Length: 157
Picture 1: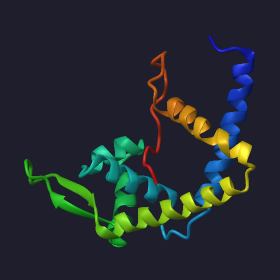
Picture 2: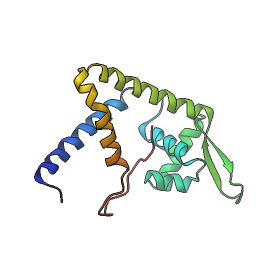
Picture 3: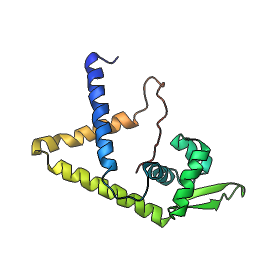
Picture 4: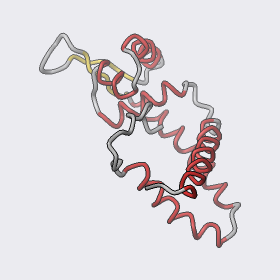
């Protein structure tokens, strides 16, 4: 059962992670929107997916995902191919350009974090690996109450 202290920490953690996420999004000159980067990350994570599967992963409507995918195709970041089991279905996969874009965005963001870590004192930096481990537990461990809402924008850009 969460305590009042847990609730107070939860408020601070949510606010801090939101601020960090906003700052990270500004750390790349990517010629793509956050929705496009999220979709690219989902395609990379899932492998060749249908438009419907991608819309479900990103928790948007198929018409919305159609517009996102059309923009990704126009930039050459994804390509469609016929499903080997059902020629009526198209599968989406990253192109070399899509992989390169994600690598560039992630590299920019990782470099920014590394620079910021370098600004911490040695004692503060020593705490970071444990902090990361705990954040990974929070993000990856299945919830105990099974009432959690599905995550939106699960891509990993």
